[in-house]
Image (cartoon, rainbow, N blue to C red; front, side):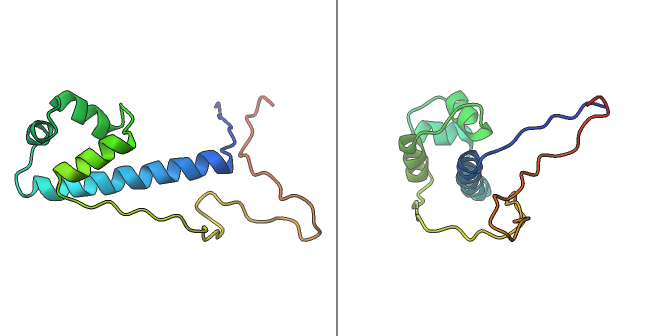
Length: 117
């Protein structure tokens, strides 16, 4: 069996989590509006855009710029809030535990090796 090993650095992990939170909040707002009868076609009409463009953004096939995010919030009659704060780093959620108490760098936890190594 082949295993793929990769190390996600703190920068990539932070960016990925932020993008995931933004996308989840956006999809949550759209789901709430769908309950009220909003369709992607209507959303595209409000934004004077194509439904396919909206679909690609919402499915993750296309990046959403800050401007596009602001436009989507406007079309959904929602307010965007944003906060920069210091993180609460706790073990778990891809934060490796410190494995040394004598001042060395923490060990990298990469994952299992294949039997061919």
